[in-house]
Image 1 (tube, rainbow, N blue to C red):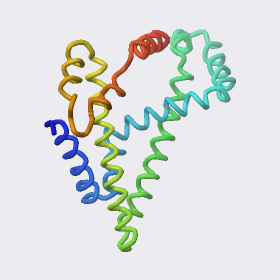
Image 2: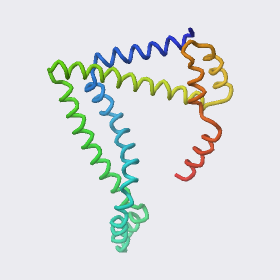
Image 3: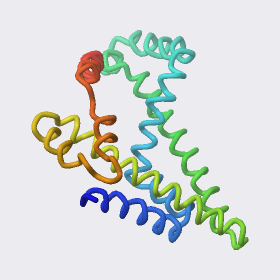
Image 4: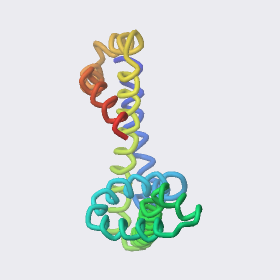
Amino acid sequence: MLVVDWIFLGIILGGLVLGALFGFGGIFKFFTTGIFGVIISVAVCILVGTAFYGPCEPFLIKIQDAIMANENWFCQFLGKLNIQVILYYVIMFIIVWLLRFIVVKIIKGISESENKVVKTVNRILGSLFFLAILLLIFFFVFFLIGWVGGQTADNFSEYLAGGALRLDRLFEFLRPTEEADVALLLLMQTV
């Protein structure tokens, strides 16, 4: 077994133990508050906000027309800035933030119950949730190394070859292809 195999097994064992120690409610609260909460809220706003933008667009156009109808420089500046879209996403962020806050409080309250069954389920779900987060981070590191490409990715692939856990196959699966790089560049140009 290679050193990376032992690291991977350590991640699995550590994720299970730490998840059971803190429980689902504690881990969920940690990963949904602070900077993680802001990142999650922004991601949800981008995903959900674009889905609801279409039905709200006529109303947002009316707001822009009302702003642009004023002749002063400040309203003209706001109209060119598309302030209605900014307001739309600010309101969406506030709504998502409040919903996230409420959901986290409810889950935290349920998970702190003194019921034996709830405590057991909390520990099991905590183990699985924390393990999933650690594995996602581990897979993301593999993806980043593959994305860097070149000699770095080739050397890393050679290092992983022959491991007992076959992490070399996982690395090749997560390694971006040239088509994915072209698609990413095209996506970045359209944004």
